[in-house]
Image 1 (cartoon, rainbow, N blue to C red):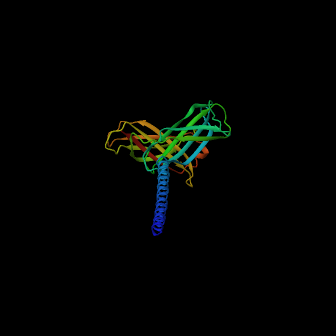
Image 2: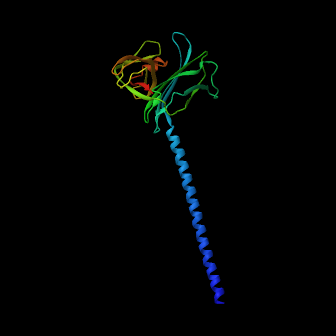
Image 3: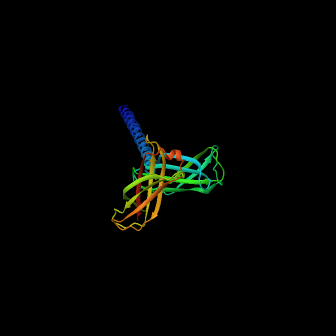
Length: 254
């Protein structure tokens, strides 16, 4: 009888140990699953962050060219690289759509409006400027602008150039503003071309538009070149509000 009791007791102890081990293993599996889920979510969040380009400011206008009398749609934006990676944003497209969401093609010339970016390689925290316009053969209804930015890791490095003597001016009745100045190659390598981009602001720091220029420039270190960055067409009454601006010059080296 004593022997039977020992067997029963021993069996009960074994079952309790097995039960405890089972609970412990289940807890470890759950913990591992939670850690895996947390890691995946964090990786997904980091990946999204790494590729994030934010549109900080944007403005669009419809106007009639005073010389050609064409109907012009113009778009300006300031974008910012909010990731921790240097990104190339040259693959940016813009579509004009009507109030129902339908693209205004084929009335836009060209069908994909010309998009200019400067700089188009953005370091973390750096801003870039977009200028774009298209011509439409009839006066458009109310429209929206769809911007698609596909940032990728760059194959080249952006180098900022020193700017001096910059000033803005506006010709009468042509809807265009100029930012002129001199860009100096303050890098250790020769340049093949430069890009100049800028943003225009009103009295209360309200965003009004952007300027752009692309120029082939064979500049050895220390050499300078004058630039003239012009805005996409903007109504004269809006350009009259411009009080301040930002302007940057850059080159790209492999």
